[in-house]
Length: 111
Length: 116
Image (tube, rainbow over all chains, first blue to last red; front, top):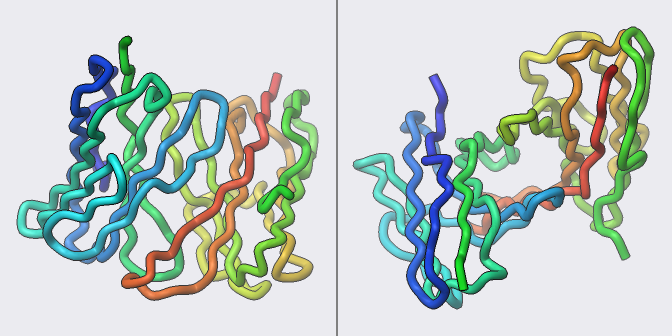
């Protein structure tokens, strides 16, 4: 059973619209949650992390965490073509960096 | 300056061969990792070292052997390569923090291994 689940997409989003990405996790011991962006042929880069229930905003990105529902989401406002990438959700149960990744959601922003 | 660098970037080799991938980080981090990303883009941890000590060893065939000569280097040696070993191998590093600070992991650019 996969511990972190994401819709694989592709998620097609018009330029300027809001992209909404969802992620669920099965390990209730998970403490921290991360969103990574990965362009094709490149390495993952961290966008945001969140550990408390509620919303966390950083620029055009907002992460939302609901531990009761075991649900994490990422909103991308004012989507740009440069946001076209695969977005990886990950969870961690401790500080050692053993991240459990989802398979990623491909986002395609269309002009 | 590249923070986490790994070599080679591309590697094509025959089944049964032995190969190594080298990784170095200049961030001063205490922890280094090897992650494997398969053809379905699923990224999975293989090993983690903290100050040269192995702390995470996932269910990985013992043909894979990591070595950390110092905390800035973590190499991966693979014996008797198999077709299923074809994947992208990412080296990564992080500084130990608690969950409130966010244990940001920085990834290298990846090593594309193709076994033929």
